[in-house]
Each structure stands twice: as C-alpha cells, then as structure tokens.
Image (tube, rainbow, N blue to C red; front, top):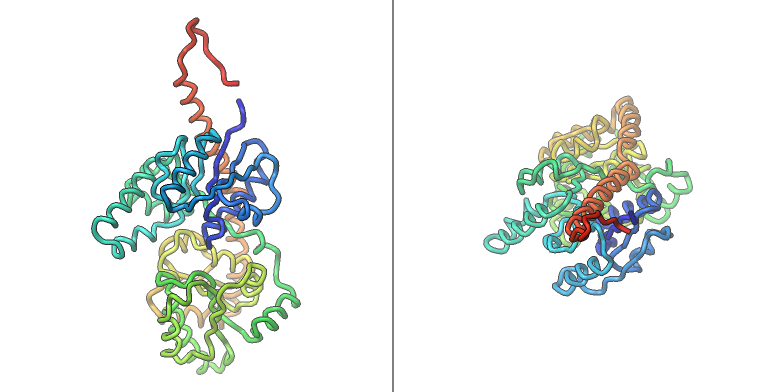
Length: 401
C-alpha cells in the first residue's frame, strides 16, 4: 500500500500559540516519520522558520486569505488535487466539514465559545456556535491538549468522549538547553537594564490572564516585604502582547503606586525569554482560564518556582510542583508569593519537583500518538474508497497498486 498522504494546515504558523504548536508538531514529525507523505498547506516563507525538512515533506502554496470564501475553496480544491487521505487542522475552525477527505482537528481551548456569546448575542453568536459544533462532529478525531479541554468539548458540544484524544502540548526544545550562563544574564542586564531581583509574568495581556490582580497582589507583597526588611528592590516584570489594547493595566499600576516597580517589556525572543525564566525569583501565572498553559511549564524547565491558579487545566499541567491559589483572591496570591519568596526549603522542593514534572510532557511522545491516529484514519479512508469500487465481473477481488 502506498504511503498515507497527510495535509497539514500551516496558515497560522506565525501566530502566537497556534504557530508554536504547528512548528513543533512539524519539526517533530520531520524527525520521526520518513514514510508518510506530508503536504504543508500555506505560505512557503512560513515553512522556512521550521528549518530543513526531509524529502517526504512538501510545501504547497496557498495565496487566498484564510477567512474568505476564495480561501476556503482554494484549500478544499488543493486537498482534493493532492488526493490527501487526511487533513490536520491545528486550530478550532468552523467550516472544514465539506473537505473531500477526513480531517482531525486540534482544540486548544474553549475560551472563544465561553466568552463570544456575550460579545455576539443573537443570531450570529448562535450561528457561530452551531457551525463549530457541526465541524467538531464531522471530525474523524479531535485532539484536545488537556483532559480539562476534552471535558469542555464534551460539555459544550455533546461530542462522544471516544472521538476526543488527549494529546498534550509540550515546551519548545529551546527551553531545555540548561541554565543561563553569566554571559546570558549580562545580556538582560545590558539590553534591558535588569540588574535587580524580580518576579516574572510571560504570556498574553488579555482580561482572562488576570494581570490586573497580579499587579495588586505585587503591591500588597511589597508592603509586606517592607515590614520584613526584605527585597527592597524587588520588581515585577511583565513580558507579553497586546498591552496597547489594555490601558486599564497602566491605570492599575498607577493606582497601586507601583510605577517604579512594575515593568512592561513587550515581546522578547525565546533566546532571551529563557534567560528571564532562569533569573526570576518566582514565575507568576494567575490566569482565570487555560486550555493547557505552557508558560508555567517553560519556567519549571529552569527550576524556577511557580505560583499559578487552581482552575481550568493548570493543576493538571503543573501537578505538585507549583503553589496553587484561587486567582480571584488577591491576598491569597500575595501570601503565596511571600511564602515562596521567603522559604528557601520550599523553593528547593519546588525546583526538584519542577524538573520531574516537565519530563511528563514531550513533543516526541505526543507526535508519536498523532502519527498512529493519522495512519488509522487515513487507512480507514482508503478502505472505504476501496469498498466503494465496483466488484470485478469475474468475482475476483481487486488490489490497490
């Protein structure tokens, strides 16, 4: 039987979150699978970010906008022309059900469908919800990035649990290169003027990330540390996106009197981010909702103590290696930060547990399971196509060349 042909939608490869997922999946597939034929559907320029790929990987350019009727038909017709046995849609998308072959879909979280009904009431909100339900029910298999996300899909869309496969995310291998050197730390000192102890947050800057309460908790922590005569120069560094769309955070800083102690750095490349993870006293991640939650795991890879939320997928991801708090309780968050900062024996235990927890998640383990599903779904599709062929007149069976 010829190799299975698999299409992978890479059109969102440059996006934060989904793009990281696509790059790591493709890189790992390229390392593990030299049998199946892979078609990367999207921009050839985006594929260059992945690096060299083996001969069984082919880039197929798509020129139309993804969110357009022309973009939809271009994608569908390309899949048909390539005679794909299977397509992997690596993000929640509402209209791939009419594809000419089976598809599997990765669902990273259900946040859009928990918040959008309030943003899009009436007909359009209901239409979007039912289109998504229709699409998920049409998928040959759904990859949920955590058990929490799987449960959310089941509850919201009544998808049978047997159709949903939990395949965990993992951290980028660049976070596994060991501790930062003194030269690395000098870089953040010279380039970013960071020469003091700091707490760190890294991630999106959006309402569900709960950054405002984190700033309030940090303000209360500074007052508590002043009583202890400890860490007088402690800062909070916030590395994240979309700050311009959240002016309320700047006002929170001013109200809290933290103008000199809270720094917003915006985007930093991974090579620099790993140094910040390594140098931070605590990584703080008080998110209200996460489908998986990679940043705490990235910090743990450096042995940095993590304080995070006790809701959504985060307890599943961090296990017993982090201190969990109710994310809406500012003083509970402050007390947890104070305890982790001041208790050296606790910090050492968290460091050891962090290293162990990180090893539970790997792209190789996750992608090997994806490959099994690809082959199962792709070959089932071929069997169905074969069964639809007319039987030979002499009663003999036919074979597949």
